View 1 (cartoon, rainbow, N blue to C red):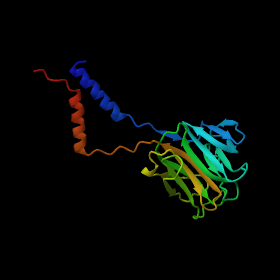
View 2: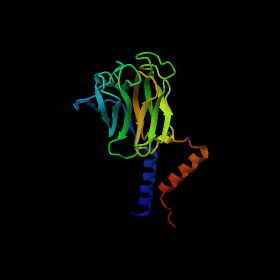
View 3: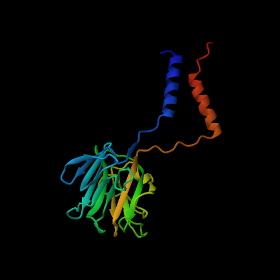
View 4: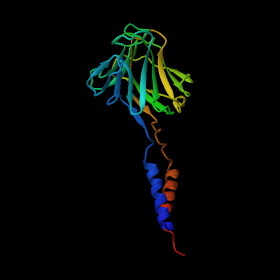
Length: 228
């Protein structure tokens, strides 16, 4: 490969790197595998509501429900629960009136680390199917080793259903092997949607001088060498 071809190849690689986003995964609870308490499986499709759910898998990630006692049929739900043609994950905590869920855990199936960037909180209310009281205390925990909590964050109260609240998370949720949710007091309904994993941050806006230098650098790579 001559010098001109080398410069063209390098320039093309630079342009390609500038244009390609980092790999990201979005868990929307649609098209994944629902694992029921009797170990049968189903597939979410934005129309059906599945109860008696033990776990859920999608895009290489897995959610697991844990129970304080024998799970009631209405304790765990995945599917079109709010009737809007949009699948969500929903739970009824053992501290409330409808179920025995005491933990919801999320891991990557291959055991590797990931970044949790943000998700949508659709319900966090101590009154089933109604507005939140403001006293709900549900935490999300991050775990670097996949077992112990390395950071916890209190979630805001949230009325039942949509509209919902987007929960943005800090760098404490980068490079983790698990995260989970737990309730500290009476909470009837807890629902979530749209988990964004390994989502690249928005690119910084270059200053004018930076844009000029970047343009000159790429142009220099693409420019053929002048013959002496």
